[in-house]
Image (cartoon, rainbow, N blue to C red):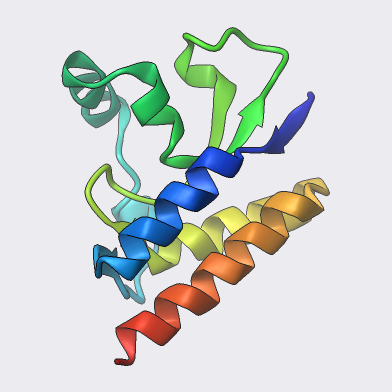
Length: 117
């Protein structure tokens, strides 16, 4: 797979964090990660480019108009989740995507700093 860092998603996440649209949750990402029905519902009223911004990774071998292209979700289409960033960071590390791991780690630190103010 040819997965690269989605720079637009990093910029978007930074803006959400700055605006306080965060969940400093301690739970497991599986409890908050949007399921297929939530993703499809979101796509009924948003462009695929908006959907893409909620994913730190992009598989360039897949079509831009497919959900499968976008990897490493970090939020629920409303807020950035701490546990989503942790999950993205851990999976990126396991799979050797160091640029995505680093971006998730930086966003995580930014979120935690914002949450403690």
